[in-house]
Image 1: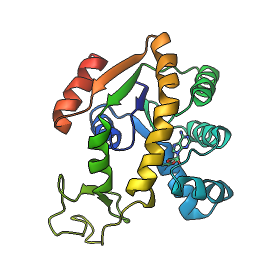
Image 2 (image 1 turned 45 degrees about the vertical axis):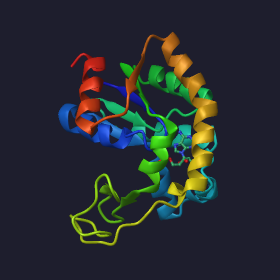
Image 3 (image 1 turned 90 degrees about the vertical axis):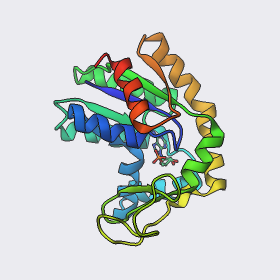
Image 4 (image 1 turned 45 degrees about the horizontal axis):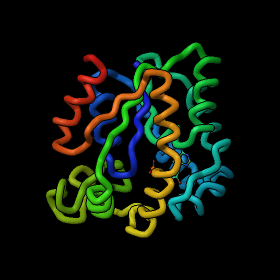
Amino acid sequence: MNLVFLGPAGSGKGTQAKKLEADFGVVQISTGDLLRDAVRMGTELGQQADPLMKQGKLVPDDLVVGIIEERFQRGGLEKGFLLDGFPRTLPQAEALDGMLERNGLKIDKVLSLEVPEELLYERITGRRSCPKCGTVYHVSNAPPKRMGFCDVEGEPLVQRSDDSPEKLANRLEVFRTEIPKVKEHYARMGLLAEIHGVGTPDGIYTEIRKALGR
Ligand code: AMP
C-alpha cells in the first residue's frame, strides 16, 4: 500500500502515519524529518535548507525531489510507503509520478486531512517534542506526565523553531497557495480522498481506514 498524506502543519499527519505504520507496515517518509536530519548533520543540503525552513518557506523542488529519490533507492519499502509532507507543489507531484513510473510503483491513495486554520494555530504552537526520541506532546491536549520533560527519556522537551505563530503563518500561506494544485492533480487521477481531520485521533483513523477500504 503506497500512500500520500496531504495536510497543513498541525493537521495530524504524523499521528495518523504512526497508526498506519503500526497496522500495515508501511514506512513513513517525511521530507521535513529528512531535511531536519540533514540540518543536524550539517550536510550541504542541510546548510541550504536551514534558513528557508527557519522562515517557514519551501525548500527548492529539486533538492526535495533529490532526497525522496535517494530514500527510494535505499529500499526497504516492500510493504509500502507513506509520504508525509511531500509533494507540496505541482512540480514535486509531477516529479514523483515520473520517479514511481521508473521504479514500477504506483500510489494507491492520496489522503488529504482537512482541518480549519484556527485549530492549527492552537495545535502547533502548543507542540513540544523530545530531542532524543522524537515523541511529540502538546502542552494541553497531550501533556507529558511531568510538565516540560519526556515521559520516555526524561529529557527537557523542545519546541521546533518554525512552530512559532509568525513562522506558522508563513507555512500556512505557502500551503494555501500550493496545495490546491496538488489536490487537483490527484483528483484528476482519481486518487484523492478528503478526510475530516477534526475529532479524536482514533475517530479520524477510522475515517482513513474507510477511505482505504481496510
Ligand atoms: P514539515 O515538518 O513537513 O512541517 O516541514 C518543515 C519544513 O521543511 C517546511 O516548512 C519546509 O521548509 C521544508 N519542507 C518539508 N517538506 C518540503 C517539501 N516537500 N517541499 C519543500 N519544502 C519542504
